[in-house]
Length: 117
Image (cartoon, rainbow, N blue to C red; front, side, top):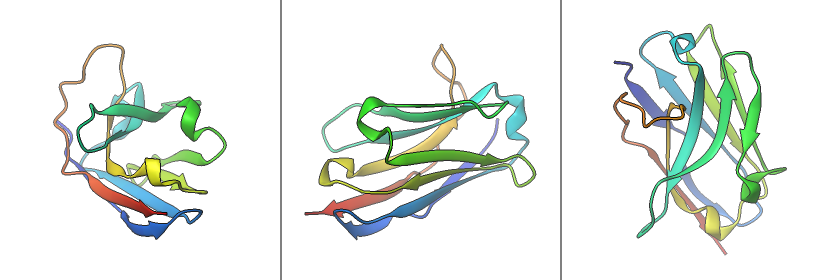
């Protein structure tokens, strides 16, 4: 198991920016890909962005052009740069392994992002 600790969330006005970090307790290259996910109140957790071991990225349609996922393999850390934030981006953000089957790696506590209008 790899323990994940998310940080960097906060309260920001619409149009603002935040940079989230996800620090892993072990080598993240053991996973084929990593992802950022979010869960808004009353909704299911959804995938926001992914980054492969080789650095290829993919984004959900509603964050394309606004969010950027990166990774630092030396620090075993994943980042999510969020720009042009909207109130609908308000959620708890989590990182974890991304795979075609549900991950068995435990989820961290997440980091709260609140965007005010």
